Amino acid sequence: MIDATKTNLLATTLTAPTHVRGMDAETARLLGKAWEVWLRVLPKNRLLNVYYDGHRAFRDLGISVPPQMQRTRAALGWPAKAVQALARKHVFEGFSSGGQTDPFEVVELLAANDFTTQLSQAITSAYKHACAFLTITAGDRAAGDPPVVIQARDALMSAALWDQRRRAMKAFLTIDSTDDLGEPDGAVFYTHEETWQLTRKVGAWSAVPLGNATGQLLVEPIIYDPQLGRPFGRSRITREVRYLTDAAIRTLVRTETSAEFFATPQRYVLGVDDGTFDGRDRWSAVIGRLLALTPNENGDVPTVGQFPQMSMSPHLEMYRQLAQNFCAATNLPTSSVGIFADNPTSAEAMQAAEAALADEAEAQWRIFAGPLRRLLGQVVMLRDNLTEIPAQVWRTDVRWTPARYASPAASADFAVKMVQAFPTLSESPTLMRRAGLTEADLAAIQTETASARSSALLDRLATAGDSQEPETVEAPPSDVQGVDMKAKFDALGVAVRAGVAPESALKYLGLEGVKMSGAVPVSLRLPEKDTVALEEA
Image: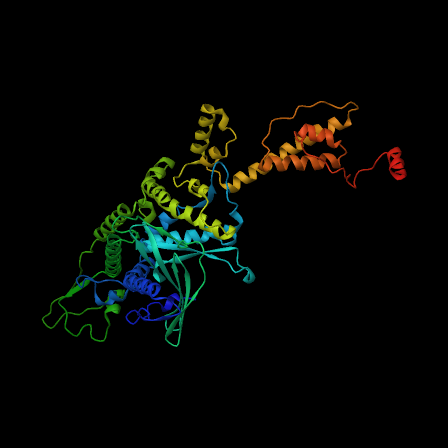
């Protein structure tokens, strides 16, 4: 395991392993390059962590802050706000293809990996360090692992090598354990040909192959704003954000200094002897309610006065300007940093304020789509022991909760107008999603609808069973897949247990092709004449 509190201990003594027992020379060369990349970017990633955690020390310019105020532990959470505000716009809902919400039946596997949380943490880390990674490995079933294990890795303890021709990673290194001094003693190295477990004991590194029969690098990057010259992207905590944070902290300290002088105004006394205040500290002179002064040796009557109070408005105005600059640099609404308008904000104003941030979130969805499709394909490969990614994976869509805020009234109005223009959308799950319903809402609605349909069918079947003459009924059109199919068989079971003739129930439900086994539920009681015949048989 990695102790995050110890990752700064050996900042200058960490070195790449020069020899790894059990690893071939070419792979060891790649490992050395990846290790050097990790060491090169480690100081920057640590600095970004310091800003994100709000631990950046006050940087005094040495001009206007008195020595007593330099000990103020001022902190500001703007860098974390820049990261989290965009990261929380990404709510993963799953994969879909051709109208199917789980085309590869991976929902349970993803849930076993807590994939929603893993992806959320990876996105947050990517916005902090520019990139993060998702690793895929075969699970150890004996240890209770799912068939495929998906883990999020941050760039603080990871590094990757880029293949410009393939436009993809060629190798990936992640540190997965450290010793008591914070120095790595365990790592995993991924290549297209093999996955290696690295261990350091008594200063020597050794490698054990874990196997990789797919021929692919089982790692997918999550990148913020990738560019041609920067394939691993950039951090949301940019140089501008760091400067604005430092400047705002200085402004807060100056404001607090001014507040101290405002609370204890500076006074002066003229015409007193030098020894009048001997034996008194400054604070007593400031707060004393009764101050007795005598004329000096020249007979001058003491005069007491107070210097004009300084205004705190310049500091507050500067802080407000810095906050606006920060919001412009990060596409955040000013309300996110405590700058509010005098009048209440309407739904339209909120939507307009977050439009730029929503645009950026939707742009990132397009960037994330490729890696998440490849991850889905690799998960299916490992689970089903395939030799290549199924072609349907590339036609799979990644679903997210809409990033743009829309009031319930606006969503309902949109849905009504769409149904009026396109009546076939009245029960469309796609329209319901656009109206703001989540996948859990859709599942509950489908279950409730199926239950209501089953109850209606049972009522009509019970009426048909009570009649002497078989009633000819026309099977209503229905979808024989998913929830509707389950509802039909549930209704069939209830009808048969209620005493309805199986043939009549099958015909009414549109299941004429289904062959009954002939078994009779134990809850039914046959007529006496039928029981006699049954016993004689």
